[in-house]
Length: 289
Image: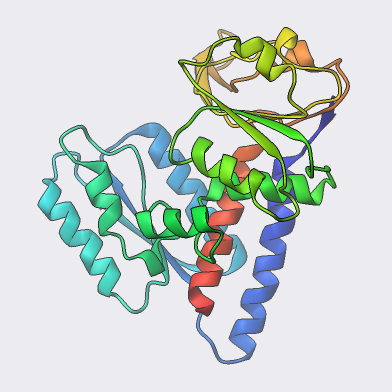
């Protein structure tokens, strides 16, 4: 398998964004400003937000981190969201998921103003995506499309199979792959927990995208030779050789596929860095609008 290097591609995109920021400043415009709300002390969430803040520094963005207690009430959180909506200095912001169980995540995401919804989760932006209209696209699917584009992977007329139907990855991924664009123009099959004959379907895929959240779910016998395999999964599994006792792995059995023909994204270093790059791109676009 030829490795699709998301980390290197992300850094290249960040360099392009940094150059665009320099041009903005030279023309008298302000730095783009990204804010993030984080609720509680979830280690993974804190790590993700930390990576985003560092990326902001790298490209020359301003950044603001709003840290809130895990016990915050939903109405209080909504007030924090409204404050960022009203803050003219903030171009875009995200609410880091997951939120505590006592908070209605969908209600919170819908409270984010669509023009500042750089995660692309608001129903208005989701509707624009489904209609092929300009709007903020969810960063992970947009990052995958960018990887396919920059690696020159042909998509027109190809059969793409997406495993997973989440509103964050699976569903928008099917829309982006099927739209009349390049990359795009795929015939797309979405698979999920009720799909029958899954192996037969995945083995017919020219492009296989795994976004199911189950470590090593996709095995070698589920992939046809020459396929492009995009692994969206970020799973932490036990590993006694690591100081932490765990390691990150994807939804794909990477080692089992490594000797096959085709392309594959590693975990870590594949889709994850691209998600950050596209979040920055959305923020740059928000600042320019």
